[in-house]
Image 1 (cartoon, helix red, strand yellow):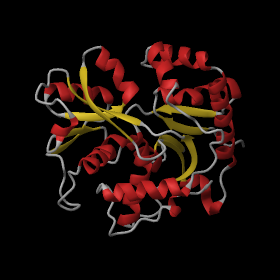
Image 2: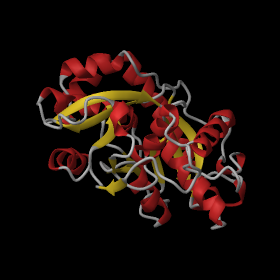
Image 3: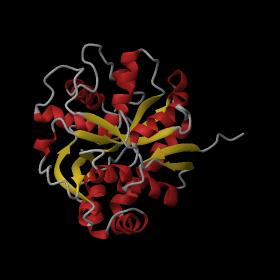
Image 4: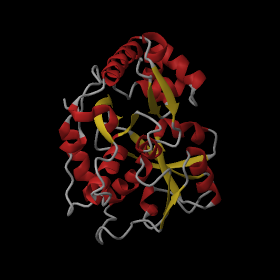
Length: 302
């Protein structure tokens, strides 16, 4: 009996275009399952065995595994097997369109931050922002924000900063730009991840005994082909992004200038994961005193 196709979780944004090309042009045999609420939701899904593979944000995956290690709760349910995007991610800092009390990121200390989920990229980057601004001064137990409001989706986050339920949130800059142009939300700053932005993880059920399931190897090879097609057919990419996703053709072309996918998706540089752990500990997302083994998070190294 043939093995069933992999269930791949992904965020349905512009970064997903090479995944679409891998399935359309190179016979990627997989069920693609969108997670518009992001990496935090995929962590829950892969642990609940609802998906086999997740393609999401580095900081979310690392934070999830680090917290599991520190709690002594086993292998965390997933492991790093590949690299999807080489460039850092630019996070826009947004507030409500009519929030005249918030004019810059400097005014956000002690504010209410909206996040998709605890442990998601939007949550983690709030603490990285606080670290860079010098707001983390009273130890791991204190928060630089008056409240952390879990809102699940990008749409809910936009509504919350206009209603006052949250004061600000952080989301990828080109995804946010459409809503600045529409006047729905307002940008007050931006911040880049200190690491390469997207990684590929696999359920630990696919790496039993140290052997990687052949379907994972096939996925990585097909993604390589999808990325090659993306690089060589930029106008097809613009057409797909502007007709199937929530972006204008102009914004899609501007984004293409900023992103770099790897030639080979196989494996993860352990130095990238170690540096991410270090920054997350500094930002208070993980506990430096409890120790985190970044190498244990990786099945396939570069």
